[in-house]
View 1: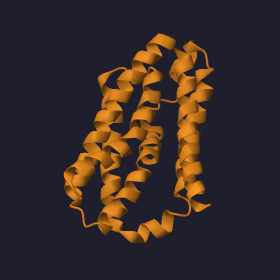
View 2 (view 1 turned 30 degrees about the vertical axis):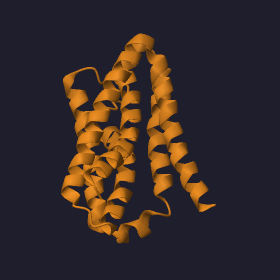
View 3 (view 1 turned 180 degrees about the vertical axis):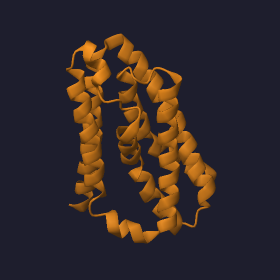
View 4 (view 1 turned 120 degrees about the vertical axis):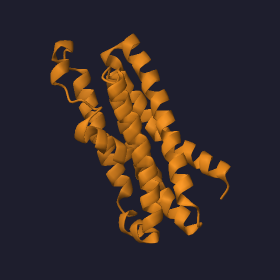
Length: 189
């Protein structure tokens, strides 16, 4: 597998990071260096780490999770999406009590949900005998860059359109989860 093919794979994997980061950026909570760094770091780390773990596990883990991985992604993204939709209806003064999607378990859930595809890609890389350290590092860096672009774009939209963008962000997360689920179920049928 050539390096350009790895970059194309990394870009494909980074699209979910971009979409989720765009949603997080609209919430207005990722508007300073710390939350931006946390999101960019976690998304890049989890993408690269999952690719590496997939490679490490080889075909063993694929057979264990292939029956429900799509449901897991759907559930995680739907959970966070519903929380964002609920928060979009809360009043501005209640903002401090809302769950912060840029830290804690919510951030880890999002990082895992966006990186499950990288796990499967890592498994396929093991079958193709790819040098995984270069590939995982590339996947992590590209995902971090796409996450940063998504956050900055989302922050701009959030400032312009306010809480409505958080509602849109939650719907988009749920849509991504449904897309993963439908795509997988269509492949089975």
